[in-house]
Length: 98
Image (cartoon, helix red, strand yellow):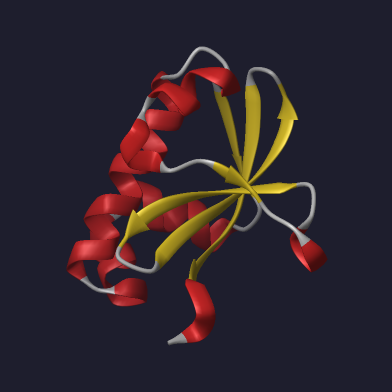
């Protein structure tokens, strides 16, 4: 799948582990990079639903039209589905802001 990044910071965090660690800590950084690798390895968006640990789901409210996948604990990766074989990573958030 093609993967776009909404910001250069998200791309740098994927490309440079130390940058991701500075941003979110070591566990979330490692899992973020793993999740992006899964996106690249998938042939199409529907393939993501077959990986139960991602917990892919559509978002509602202000984020309607986007999807979330679990990174670690309450951390999640927000995506926009641009085509069957293309996504854009929008942001990494700690769900509920806790």
